[in-house]
Length: 317
Image (cartoon, rainbow, N blue to C red; front, side, top):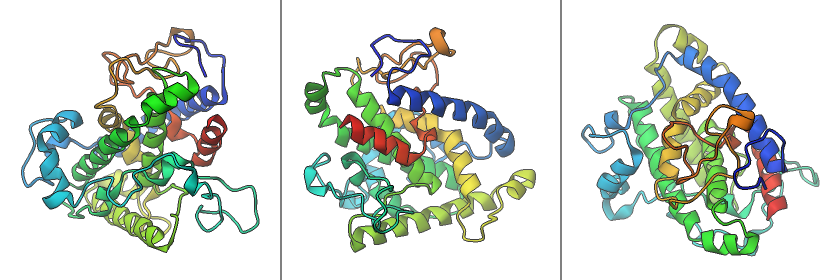
């Protein structure tokens, strides 16, 4: 764990190392993605039409606060945490390492990843219920992802006191938990998530979600023009649009981070200085896990392979 206020480049833990490497990856891909997409992938919440009308703000916190009930739908049938275990950190589901629950794992192979407790019940049910209209697809998808992120954070916040008491990590634990779920949401959107599900019912839901995302990214692709459409062509012929999904996430991650930190405690800080410059000149995200006065996402876990993040999370737990 990095010491509060630490801004040096020396890695004080594996967590620091992963986050630093993630930043190096992000710094490389962000400009390339921006050049490729020509701004055609960046979503605007004010353009999202899932409410049947244009919205007045691009701030996810304001939008969800004002339009939350409408976003959730009749009887909250699109509540992001629906059909998820109400207990997020339980030993009852410790066996999420078996080959049939983790993508690319093999039977009797002890080298596979283990999904941590937090990942088992990520609040993304509304994504399973998304519409797939071509019109405003990139904007509508952003609104849905922000809604999921906001409620995921609310679910994790319930455990903040418990974990701060356990680790003596006051002020940092909630930002780390949010960063980990933020990265997992990013993997879900990009089609890189390793967790297949606990049982056949959940596996079927997760498969349906991935098919829904494929359909949405196909709609986004069909709205592209010129070189962008050529580059993002579905070369694997399975409708995955992996390159498109990767760059959509890069273009919109800052808005999703705003959503997942909407209700973060005022004094919540990220564990590592990442807000300005690099190395010794970096500063901590000291308020609500955000960089003060700058549109910078302080975490780079979403550019670290998921299985490595999970190993580190298990080691810390």
